[in-house]
Each structure stands twice: as structure tokens, then as C-alpha cells.
Image (cartoon, rainbow, N blue to C red):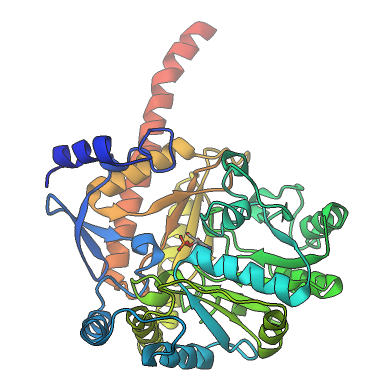
Length: 457
Ligand SMILES: Cc1ncc(COP(=O)(O)O)c(C=O)c1O
């Protein structure tokens, strides 16, 4: 297969591939043939450091040898099984996950995708509370199923869907770097939430059921809520009889430097946690986790959630092994060390380059927000586009993110197993890219000055 052949297939057999579509231009990206550890290889044999961890499913490495071994072993025994019967890997995963989860959230059920787990979590909250309305955050993303999860993914344009799910609305995300209320933490006293809740109370169409949030809003530009935010959300939920659902797709299982992303804030205990992405170590499996009490209340009201492949032995065995690897290899600690290294390097760069406006995130979920002017915070969307293109050329893949229209955040999601050498290689590419952009801009400015000066004379 070569690029020309791939383009032919795309133009004849795939959709949606129009330039204006979400993944338009995908044929211009590397076409991958192989992956190993932190590296992916394209059809030309070119290797890239994968600082997007696949689609975040490779946070424990690509082709981790223990994952390959357990998958091979289970493949030969039992790949697929009925979900109305138990199988051993399924039972073992319930137990392994239950022991890892914070008390009292030790009950789990399994689904396939992250979107599935959010659908399952929302339904669970609705059945347990008897409420309907769900609040999300305006920079949040919770999935791509056509109805409920896209309706709760306020960071995408909801008006592009055919129908928006009723009883879903947004509160302001606590995006302190660009505070929507133009206030400053901590003197703001998290006014964004107070004001949003007042509006939400006025807007509820029924009894409210849940608040859903990401411990770090990843696709929204790696926004880290300020200390105390989720505690306030939790209090607001308790006051209204709502449940707190935390979508730990991108923050759970070690990636932020703790086992779960919410554990960075004291006094917070969600009612429901949704897990996905690297839970399967590269295979698709997700989980909805809750307490016995909430599970029982919901089940009494008819709750169930499943999929034909949700409890496949292959996926469950992969799930158990990935959890074992995360614990055995102390990957949360490694994620915390990677955070230090990357943030340290960017802090140094920030002294030199005004382009670096904000450095944030935790563990291996990091964001560097680029601005053309630190005071005005003008988003440097086009500079980031050039940086990403340069990095790709030099063998580094990462994704660009931002809140709603913005695309000015470098999102770095290296696998938790990344070595210092790999991290430094990525940092050196990014440093060169930023230096080139800044130099290029300065040159342009210098070229403009003489003519402007002439006019002045
Ligand atoms: C926080 C979060 N939740 C849910 C999802 C949906 O997961 P999936 O694409 O597996 O359905 C995503 C996808 O990126 C996500 O980032």
C-alpha cells in the first residue's frame, strides 16, 4: 500500500472525508502500519513518538508484552461469550477493579466504548435518583454517540447534530486562564459555578439527576479545575439530590499521577465513575463503577446496561492485565515524574518565548496554551498548526486542542511508560519548533518595520 492507493480508497470508499468534516484530510496524515512501546511506524517506515497514546488507549504502551501475552492466551481459549452468562475473565476483572476502586464505589459493569460508559452512567444516575436533568461543562467532551453523549459534549457544536437530547445543559467550565467572568482565583470564590448553578436551577426541566465532569477537561484544552471546584460541585449535587458522575476516561488509572484524577482534590468522592480508553490496554472495554446503594436503587427502578461484546473474555482479560501492569509497574508515579520533566522544560522555554501562555495538566495529560501576546492572550492557533506540522515532520505526534473554537493548546499525552530519553527527544523537537516560529515572526516584523518607517517620514 502506498499513499496514492490509500487516497484512491479514501476518495472512493470512505466517508466522511470532505475537508469540512471532523476528520477531513485524514489521508494526508501518516498511514500507520506498526506500533511498539511509544513508537508508531507509517507505510514509508518512518517512526514517530506517539505523544497522543493512540487515541489515548495506549497509555501503558503499544503492544505491551504482557498485554500481547494475555491476549494471545485468551484468544486461544475463549474470545467471545454470551453476556447473560458469567465467564472467568469477567469475574476476575470485576474483582480486580473493585479492589482498585475507592470505597464505596466497588461495583462495576462493563461496556465497550467510553461513550457507552457515559450513557450507562447517566442512565444509572437517572434511575437511582428518579431525576432527568443532567448538567455538563461548556468545555467538556463525553463521547460521540449521536444522542446523549454528543449532547453532553458541549465543547463540540451541538447544533450540528440532528437532535439534541432533552434535559442536558451546560455550566461554565472553570477555565481560570480565560475566566469567562474575568475574575481571578481564589478571590473569585469560584463564582463561575455559583452563577451557573443559579441559571441551571432556573433552567431545569424536571428533577435534576446528575452533574457530569472530567477531573481535567482534556479535549477542552486540558483545563484543570481550581482547588475546591469539585467539592463545591459535590455539595451542590447533595443539596439538589443529584449524583456526581466523574468521567475518568482520560484521567483514570494512573495517568494524572494518582490512580484516579479526582483524588487530587481532598474531600471529593463521586457517586459514579466511568472508565475507558486504556482500561483495555489497547482493546475496547469500558466500565461504570458505583456503590452498592446506588446500584441497588437504580436496579430497583429497572436499570441495566450491556452490549453484545461488553463482557467478552478477551476484553475482560485485557482489562485485568492492564490494571495489573499499572499497579506492578507503578505507572502513576512514572506519570508524575514525566509531568515534572515536561513542565520543567516548558517553564524554562516560557522565560524565552512569549508564545507559551500557560502550562497546565497533570501526569501524562498536559496542555501548553499558546498565545501571540501574553497580556491580551490572543490565541496562537496558526502558530500551533505550524508547530504540529514541524513536529510531525521530525517524528513527533501530538494533538491540538482548545475550548470551543480555539485550537491553541498543545496536548501532550505520552504513554506512562515513556523513558526520559523519549520525553527529552519530544521536548527538543517542540523547542526547535517554537524557536523557528518565534524567529520567523521576528523576521516578518523586521521586514515590515522599514516600510512603515518610510511611510512615517
Ligand atoms: C473524557 C471522554 N469521555 C468519553 C469519551 C468517549 O470515548 P469513546 O470514543 O471511546 O466512545 C472520550 C473520547 O475521547 C473522552 O475524551
